[in-house]
Image (cartoon, rainbow, N blue to C red; front, top):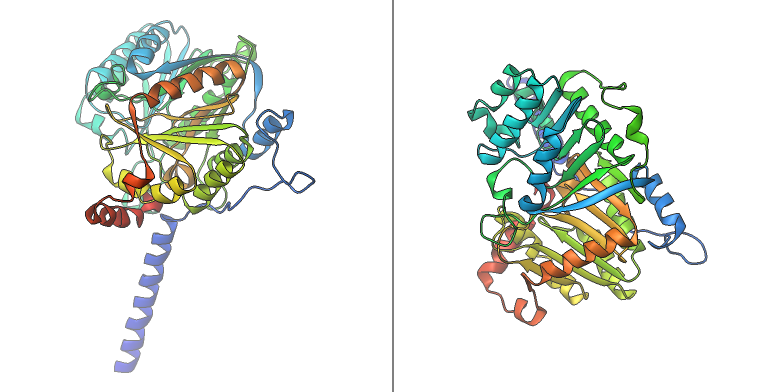
Length: 433
């Protein structure tokens, strides 16, 4: 009898350990792409300037590109919020707003008050908040006041005991769509440190985009997907997708990329791999949380070997997530030896998530260069193909270099044992950062 009891205890222990292992693996998985190859005479994927590049990107990222968009780069709070508030106040039919991070303050109050004013004027206002990132708003009357004015508010992916296995999967999307006509995405949120010019302490450096044209429909559809998940209601029809949403407004080729989590290869991963592999001359990456895995570090170094000028601007000591900084720094030496130029932004936290390749292919949005964005998050990036917008992106990158410190290999090799130890420990957590 005692033997049976002991055997039963062993069986229960094994089952519990198996469940723990499954749980750990479910929140620490990476992405599988190791290299990019195009079998044929060139053995290379289509370069950025090739007409096949956009076709390949469409196929591998499910991003529809169309000519007829008008895109405006909005830098920092000073270049974003005044435009955004004006556009929100102009809404006549619908306002759809999705935010990942929000906290009490002037920016959140301004958004709330403008949405309330439009809701009382008869505009259909829908607000979708990530239950984790926007959790600080629960301490205020933000939601209650919106609902009292007639706005609809939903929380996405509430954290319950029975959803803990999915708690790491967040929607990092930023989306504002006005009347199905004007749209915004980027890295901004509802917090006061997003105000300012991005050059002073506590005024985050950020990059966002305002756009009109067919790409707006894709951001509205991304919002609709989140709204359906949170409420069970799938938005469609002329109210949210008026016929004019598909009409051309400008001449820019652009597409809204909406990435989703997956156990295997993801849209985000394929986007980064194709972008790096297709660059021929320049590859300028600005990313607040830069923790590339071994395969992406190899891709960046391979790009240098084929003559690409690869430069990265990331957060340094001003970062809001120090663990991520240390984890990224653990890889600096390898990349510096491979010819990648790395810079840390010094005046304040840099939260931008942008890429520009060969001055032609650009991306601005919410996606970070880390495993969380690649494997676990929903993200929204506007991807633009064109020399005009690419030149503007190059110019912004070069301006940011003026406020950044370049990491030099000789100096980096002499950092302290303490720093190396902290980096080593942080690097072990790279899959969940």
